Length: 275
Ligand SMILES: [Zn+2]
Image (cartoon, rainbow, N blue to C red; front, side):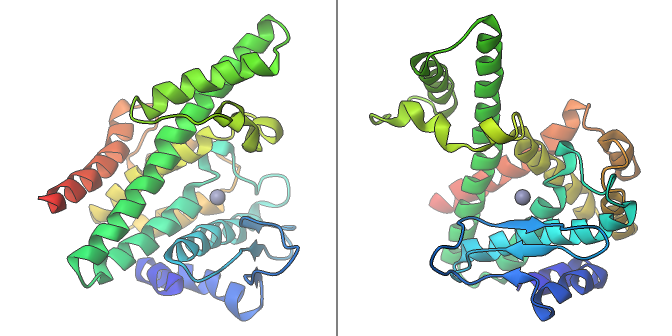
């Protein structure tokens, strides 16, 4: 499913992803003691990446596979930059992965046989996008407030909980009832400790990919070639330079409107189905 979605975009992209399946570069099965989650590891630029999954065959797992293979394709293409320049900056870290998901999602959506199937797919995608954009921005807000407060002096766990709850209440809105214990939920996000401010990459990546996808849908005949060039650049260029060939500029608010309008468009479509 993922390979055919990739091939519809470009046969070259499916070619790059193919050996992950045929050469055993994917550890997919669930087994006792295996780490949870999923990732693509680039290893070193002179060898090849590996993908780790916990695959159970749910639609969500197919999207995770599409996501991690996106990283894998990116890692293969960027390997030519060598060890020091291959890894992407935070701004583009989730570009190929989210784009790979979008290709697969569009393929599944166009193959949906009933209105109900279409609704389930759209609702899932909207929920993912809200998690990727709204929730991760709330996480980022939390980190900004936390680091600013810490600069003023040491913080107790209670004070950290308070900052967390104030941001969560604002981002989730009045419809949620927060259960006891939610105040310490900040501690379940490993990024806060291991890669501070990384969370914004998800929101940035989603917005960026939505804008990129919009350009692709507009039918730029050189889109695929430009897209591969962007991935091949690895970490050697700033996003401003990388997005220019697509006529995109992340410092322009219209760029983000383009991405957000894609999400609101899907919500509108879902709401229309309720009638
Ligand atoms: Zn990722």
